[in-house]
Length: 230
Image 1 (cartoon, one colour):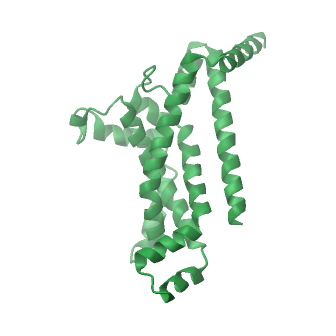
Image 2: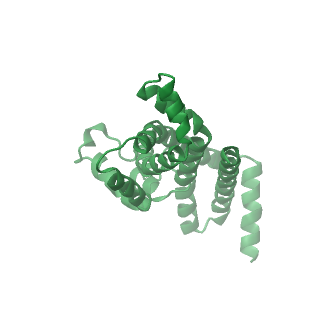
Image 3: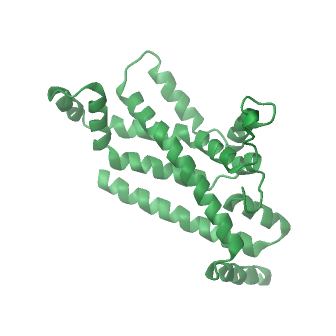
């Protein structure tokens, strides 16, 4: 109990003094997560909009596939991307392994199905009158899709925020693809895992507190946006 108390006090000191190591780790985590969320959103939101509005033979299969991919563990995604970027892989010549780019790629792959699935769900609940009105006013297919997406904009933002919340706390991809290199690819979660295994509970607690604050902010933001859609 005494060790826990001391570790807690040290963790607060690290936070209040903006410890350089903590700052670097948190900055890297936020940079990787925001970038991967942006990439996944740029691809996933249009994909979800198209999936929700299109009619084709294997649509139900694609929806089931997306929902299945939501449950894939981060370690599995990390291993999949690893086979692409390691030295003998298809992307090996790019030398991405153990770099921030590899982590961002892996995280984007992880949350792409989530963004697409949530975006499709957001579009599917938009009043059909919106689409019909756009067609009546002479809008083409692309303009109609944009109009429908604008109608569901708060829900689409929730999808992106939810994806960020998913990726900021992942650990498997960061370890496998990043190598946990201090000042380069070390993230909040990999640092917590490393420091805890070393018995350095203070730094682990400090980073855990920051991760909780980020998760809380993500949940609050998503809840406020959902209230706007209600």
